[in-house]
Image 1: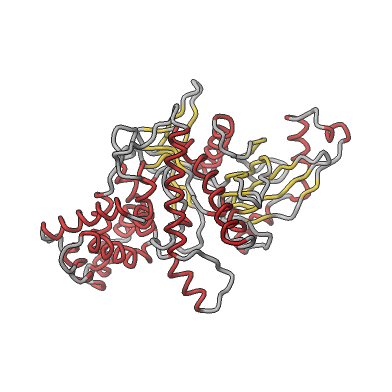
Image 2: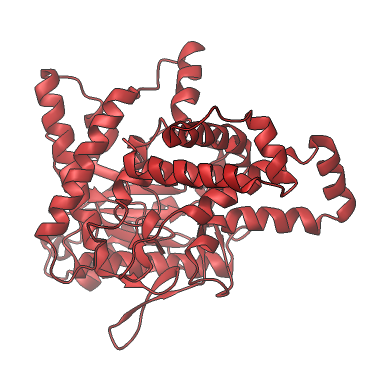
Length: 458
């Protein structure tokens, strides 16, 4: 999180009654922790400068007793932007965090209280939660002090904590995709009411959208939901606009999309287990807090938590270990070539090394936590090992501006994995798929190469 004000938060910041934050916190303390020494003195807590995340602003709160909380407010928490869907999403996020905090050993901050409306002291929707100690993971991951051995020890310790936490999510598997809902009976179900969507204008915001329960039990429909939505939006714009697009690119975009859909169809899902599993929605460095020694202190970023297909579930690699497959590396190298020295990243060799370490840790944690946890089996495709490929596929589905480059990279790699004859030119392959006139032998070669790539991905 950053302390510098971001322009997109201007509307929210102007809405917040900042002078009331300390009083709100004191009232929560008085209600839920009446024996805290601060309640007897009536001393209001101090409120720190706001910290800005991708989609939330957080105010650190410190009581005289030393107790620390955090008040989180969503970016869309203004009367002009708040919707029924946003209300449902916030309630779902609170329920998920509260549930995981009390039923697992995952370091999820405890929920103190929340309000989804505007008739409250601070004037906007908010969540009061425990403060997460530690520092953002990236500060320790890229800390080179102490030499190579110390760096490796810290990184391994961080990955160990994360793997242990993610495997625990395997306790909650479902027959369909959806957000977590806790029934009065105490059972947990996945309700297909919302999903996490990327911002296609490049702002990186979170968009909450409803989706029908149709195909909620289909892992392939889960993969392509954003591409399907994109297609529906194009069609709703009118046939003339759609035809013009097709004329302009001679069906090239449609061909790339057809190849991508075929790759999705070939992604194997583990057998003999429920097809969907509870999964952290944003496996990025910014959502993990660690000590300077690498001990996992807290996991945030649970907004939009859903059950996902096993192939994209809790056993997948952290996103920062797959940068070389999602083209982030090329983007970062371009920034560095342009003179931007603020970006730090690992080289491909490091990524491959720590991918292997993390996959081994996942297997170790599965063996240690086997009781009550439904996990993938040894004779299935290794979900963790193949996740650079599935991550690249999802990135191509979600971000159309990267689709061509990622699909071309995947096709080149899978054809190489097939160890057969020289591949056709990518442009020619795209046009063949666009016309739906694919030679069965070519398709068979692609399929074989894809499965080989999944099994041997490093």
